[in-house]
Structure formats: structure tokens, C-alpha cells
Length: 229
Image (cartoon, rainbow, N blue to C red):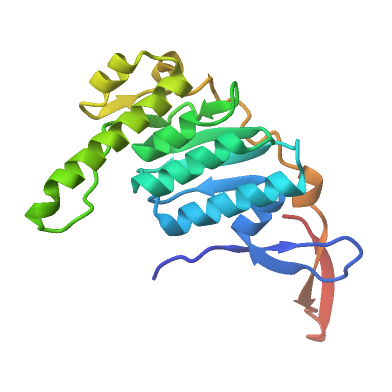
């Protein structure tokens, strides 16, 4: 059976009982966002909304976007990329498995000197693919024009984030270009290879004591014990 989003206990100050919340909600409280699936409008809108909220709630406080994605739709990916660019809070982008296609553009869109990848991660760039229409030959010329426009726009985004000449980007996008972390650093897609990517987490919040009901072995009555997560 499929595994749903895990729930974890979260203890609010001055409250006796823990509240069970989604893991990703707990991470967002720690200003950490996870892009861990194919990029579509649903995940894009969710991530954009969280980023806007975090930027408003703690302006100037940095947050982290962890990426493990095969890429996905162009416009939802561009929405995330553009939103990162408008954030006044520092945005760290970290590749934790793979950042392919549009996900690599989002990775490269992190703020200066805040883009990284795990030592065993992979980053892949290639030219955009899309299909706006299904089988309507009369629309093909418009589709081709739009695809070329999108390709030029994405090339300009890579030029802006990597510092590479446009002609180099055009040539490299002609094929799937899979990069090791050190190669991604050299290319300008990231700034470093992560050594302590979770150092920003608040241990006091995550390991806060919580009260969990338990059965007493002797009489079966509920008892409580402090647990740490």
C-alpha cells in the first residue's frame, strides 16, 4: 500500500499534549521546504505560497529549499524560479538526490553563494520539451514558435545564474548533460558541495519533550512519559 505523508508530534509551548502534524508542516515551521516530486501546477503553487508566507512572516530570515526532482512542466517551474528571485529573505537551494531539467533551473536560481548539492547528488540540464496541443497540425507552427521563445527564456535564466555565455548554454542543452556536484560547481549551477546541510535546524524545537499517553503495565491505566523526537 502507498505510504502517505508521515505525521510527527509537535509540542507547543505551555500546552500539555502534543499535536500530530504533517512532517512537511513541521519542516516549514523550521523554514525548510521540500521539492520531492515532478513539478506541476499543484506542487508549484504550494511551494510558491509557502515561500511568500515565510518571506512575509520573517523578512530577512533565510529559508532552505531541498530539491529531489526529475523536473516537470515548464511554467510551474518558472513560477518557482521567479518567486525565489523576488524573495528578500535569503533562499538556500540544496540538491539532495537529483535536480533534473526544470529542477536544475530552480536549484541554480537560489541566492548567490547559497546553492549547494549533496556529495552524491546529480544535476542534469537539457533543452525544454513541451506539447501544448494534441494532434492538431494547424497549431504546430504556433507551438514551435512558443517552444523556441521558452527555450530562449530558459537559456537567459541559465546565463543569469551561471555566468556562462548564451552560446555555451545553447550547445549544452542540445543533449542530456548529467553533472557530478563538482562539475555543477564548475559550471556555475551551484556554489558548493554540502557538508552540514541541516545545521540550520533548531534542535531545541525538534527534540522538545512531548507527553505521550502509555498504558501502565501493572493496572492498565494510562500513564505519561516524556519522549524526544
